Image (tube, rainbow, N blue to C red; front, side, top):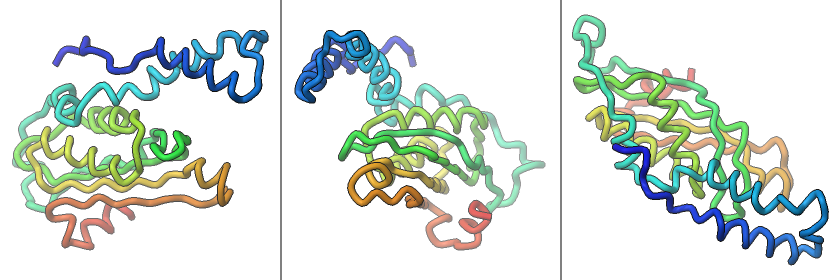
Amino acid sequence: MSSEKHNKIDVDAIEEHIRGIIKALGEDVNREGLIDTPKRVAKMYNEVFKGINYTNHEIAEMYNKTFEDDPDVINNSNDMVVVKDIEVFSYCEHHMALMYNMKVSVAYIPAGRVIGLSKIARIADMVCRRLQIQERIGSDIAEVMSEITGSPDVAVIIEASHSCMTARGIQKPSAKTMTRTLRGKFENDAELVSQILA
């Protein structure tokens, strides 16, 4: 798939609205420290939310390079590939607050094809660059992984801190959120899941 897909993100509109927010906060948008802030924020949003430009299917098309299983290496129906502690970040759709200290672990049981390990990290990164909830991140990564590898057996485990809990509202800085998305064999095999968590 071409990387020159139409960009859904309107940076000019973001710049204009950020300028309005700064004014609404009672600040002077023309003072030295703020005069270029709307442009900087628009540029940042274009980068950190670039995953919005792509559907899960389009992300799968971007990273769909796979390799045939080596039957001498992966020949057991429960052999699995695990990439642990992929460091990413995202933004909560409820407060547009940062999800940070986020680590994603992805596992799958190959079904004839394997994907390059760096592609798994790229998929996690791209999926995270959207406004969303943590539960959806796991579901979206699992969907993309299944489409690329043809395997129904995928698990995604995510741990993150949410600034909507740590910096506002209840303000509990040590609170972490863990989500588990389990598909196929992972749904009913606690031993497989414990191997990922070990």
